[in-house]
Length: 186
Image (cartoon, rainbow, N blue to C red; front, side):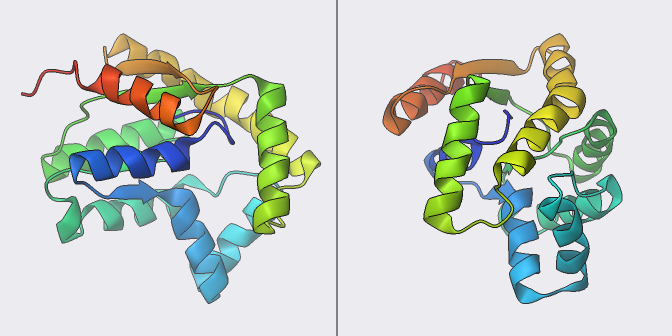
């Protein structure tokens, strides 16, 4: 977890590879559907262009289908999900049904101004039309309103690991690995 631009996608790939599990990114799935012109992609595009979250029912269905795939049986890493309290409840139901459990919830913390700078730079490099400054700032607002409260939910459950997301990518990765390696296997 973490605000847009915190490095979730970058770190998710390293963590998933380290543990031999798939990284399931709602953003990647949305973008793939948009580029393929699927009905889900067309619906998601409207929200993404405005910097809004894609509705829970669309996102939940997509995640439910993905964690049912064979490569996710031994475990998975979620990147960009859950984003709302309703999605936390939905995820609880999904993993209860599949027999999975949450081992940890990693949240990357980064200063807002650094995040805006990162996202605008990424937009220029990757040609992301959905990363204008207005859209980036709107996503920051939504994160504060809808996603930041999830941090307390997972803190109360004893699952939260907060990691400083500033610095070199390798340094952040090592902080994550150090924090995750102290989680007991059960």
